[in-house]
Image 1: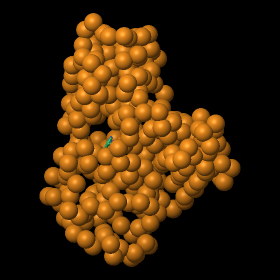
Image 2: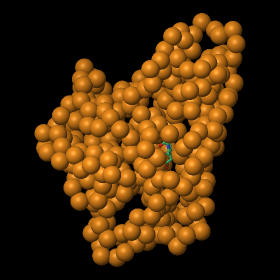
Image 3: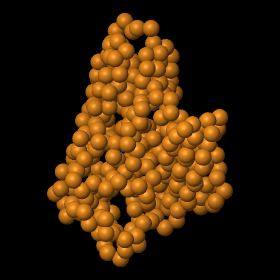
Length: 312
Ligand SMILES: NCc1[nH]cc(CCC(=O)O)c1CC(=O)O
């Protein structure tokens, strides 16, 4: 099946978003499917002051592209999957998930000091992150550190870090990697679980657009799709929301899925975690089963706390 007109690929206009959309374009072109990029400004990019968790709406990065899709100004939209609310708008469907990049979070620091920081140390250090999920996990490990809010695209945040006296800032490894912005003093935070679907690129299209749906099949990476589905099912079963201190990472090796998830209170004091393995026949159940396990441990108390904070 070949489209008669180039597929219009909607993307945000940040450098990272454009890079990701170009990946999609390259794969399509390898399969002789013509396409064109349609960059669109999103509200999440226009307001650089308000922390994301205070914007009060879900999908600040995705709703502008959703509107473009539903009004037929674009045929597909490319998103950083971790920014996409688990509930897609009516009429919009997931048409592919690309093979995943690096999944973790990293600390970009001013020097190599991090290697000497002890868990629960008394030193007060200043680290920048705007993410409630990263804050909660950081405070769980370093309760005495001060965490500063930071917003903006990767380039903006990196410049801000250079200009401030902070010891470091936290970034998704995938973004830095894709922008070739890996800095000298960068440390993998292997003790921190990423946001559900971090490092994955999702493609969506209109539900009834058979042609685009078919073309997107060449973009889909099945193992990645199974892993991020499990992570998002975990999130959906617990809250169904973004900007919550809920993390998850699923990986598949030799046909077995290893699933890790956690929920923390926003101050990092309470933490529940789950680690489970699933064989292929249970992949579709993984997220839901992990959520049931963590709730059984008593995580509901933390969820109630998060809900109360959100209402304030
Ligand atoms: N919320 C912003 C965002 N959305 C996707 C990425 C990076 C790429 C990815 O994680 O898929 C980032 C930057 C960051 O968290 O540092």
